[in-house]
Image (cartoon, rainbow, N blue to C red; front, side, top):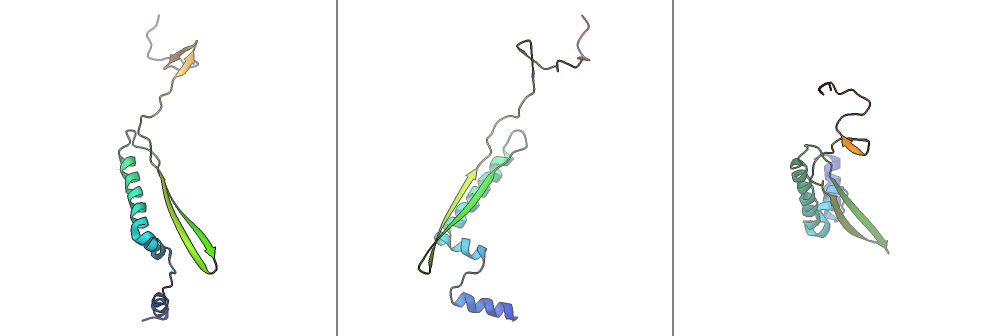
Length: 114
């Protein structure tokens, strides 16, 4: 056993939490960790289901640390912004107060001659 492993075992025996992954797993007896995983999985599913094949989701983890007289209270929060389903935008030009699919300054090669 190397010195680092030995030191880690000593600190664990004292209830010392050194690593973020350990801390997150302990918050709210593991239910916070489960909720974060659920939000991420929902984001994956929503992104895969988007009709345009592109999108963006956001999952934010916030830890508020409140210190008083040697004790720290940690309040975890998880928030997510799931992608909105929908369709991609379509480009049109406004020509004489009406919508056009043809750019007003480009010649339409496929339009029949008058």
